[in-house]
Image (cartoon, rainbow, N blue to C red; front, top):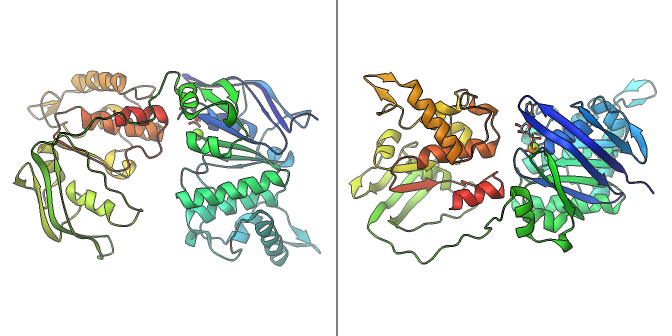
Length: 443
Ligand SMILES: Nc1ncnc2c1ncn2[C@@H]1O[C@H](COP(=O)(O)OP(=O)(O)O)[C@@H](O)[C@H]1O
Ligand SMILES: [Mg+2]
């Protein structure tokens, strides 16, 4: 029997990047095939080609042994190919059932959109694959994990049997990931085939039947979890050996750098989010703050960085009071901050990479003299930092908004680490990053 899907020699160039370079990939029936690669490796491009969103420059696609031309998503759906995108494509104000039916002609007795029938089919699909969801709920009221189920139901409703999931776990909690894995296993058990895109090694080792690794637009190799290790996969992804564990000796703490005493901080709704927290951080040590999202970590970090008002308690940096200091005062005491929400707190998205690389010191010499910004020095400094921190960007003049999440994070790290710092506050610094970048940040 021919494979369910075969891609041969798929090639796609964007200005300045060969996103896909003669990629071959086969998907067998009932298989979970993981497509693994770092940010920018070309995974989404390949899947967008398969889904008819991009036209390849070269190459061919075969579905169940027959050559097909896929010009748009409706061609893809007609061939049984469905895709859940990294960013969901649901209409927030519509219900689950309305979203699922959207764009599908459901005609009964000449009447369009038979809601009762659609709701029945949604319930049936939910039950069959373990995708629990209320067809009458409004999308915007649903947690992300449930919205993702709706995206999957949409595909099953359209009778897709080749399902592409693009970084489906990026937005999920560990519990939601477990649930998604159950759904994926249930789908393949019932004859569906799945392309599962990720850059997370543990996930591919858990869920995949086969793994194809992409790097710089090329297939590095195809393997199985039994035949490989996380270390080997990481090396395939990055193109060199990668340390997956942090090598560190015992700490030799020195003077106290940060002292927090009885700190109380409100959240946006005026509820007490941090209740009387006290701790110290000494030079040469790493203090880990662990907790499930929503238990005050965000507010704690914002208060320390000067981004949120303190309602009680005290903060001292290097012995001097810093309670309710401004962000710039905190920064000038030698505190670096890698924020949790890099797009909101870490970057000015519409500004070029270069400006974002000097945001915290732009008003100092050598970048500014006599109130004028020295563009030339900003640019040469930016070029150096882009090199040193391996920020993948077409140029330092590119708006930072058009970089991948991982590269945006590298811009922040490059900026924060490029001045003398005494204390680093890093909030989920490796979220959404690939193993190569995570290793870099840990070091
Ligand atoms: N629409 C586009 N225009 C220009 N460049 C693009 C476009 N889409 C992707 N790229 C570039 O192609 C490369 C591969 O990107 P992508 O397929 O999104 O990677 P991945 O999904 O593996 O992170 C990257 O260098 C990216 O910047
Ligand atoms: Mg992608």
